[in-house]
Amino acid sequence: MTPSWLARHSRRLGILVLAAALTGCLQWLHAYQTYLQMSDFDRHFNVQVSDEFTLHFKEPRLYSSDFVALANLYPSEDLPLKDGRRWRYWFRKVGQDKQVLKPEIKFYSQLVFNAEKKLTDWSFSGLFLEIAPPQFLEVSLRSIAGAEIDKEKQSLRANTDHIGKITAPLPSKAAVLAKLGPPLKIEDEPEQEVYSYLFLLDTPRIEKGYEDNALTEVKLTFAKNTQALIIMAGKFAGLKVSIDYRKFLQAAQ
Image (cartoon, rainbow, N blue to C red):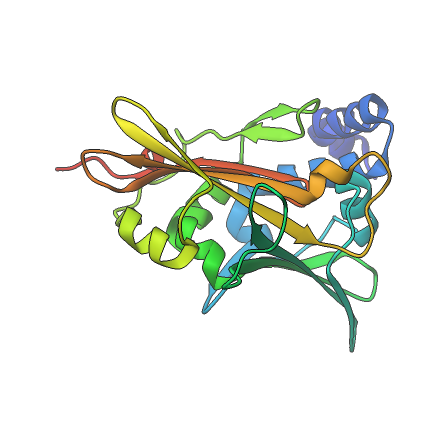
């Protein structure tokens, strides 16, 4: 490690050391390292879309232990692979009494770890893509570069100024309701409606004091004039997600 190398990278090293000191835990350092990779998205990640959406980590930094430490939740399924493990978090639609509704409506978030227990792939199932379409999900991930970090709330406020806009259609309310069914409640506002759904994480174990983390309220905001989904917000196994789809749309010519 030469003096010139240290001079070029001292600022980044200083930020990493400061982040570790402020948080006092390695999982936040690993998360911050992953956040820094977002500034060169195509170098560190690629996206695959089939019946699910997968984010592949080319140079993984996050460990399986980081997810348990950050969310205090354990996966629904923990399956061994040839060179690692696969975790799957199942979320099932429930009523106000937290009882699973019939017919069952569910989706999953899946994590694949290599032999070193580092995250290599993060996937979301088809039902989740009904409320977070692949093109919008990818562009929202790209917008994390330069995002404002709120450590206390464990969230990021994305910066959409530096990314290209897309022309994908917004999901329609009719299409979303056909997949998710009726909401638990509807908030009627002057120009929009907010539909709220409850999903319960199927998990064999929850750290004491974090039981509420297993319950996710998903809020979907539909514009009254277009009947299109414009905002999706929720918290999934400790991961807070809030996407305003209008910020990613290319302005009409």
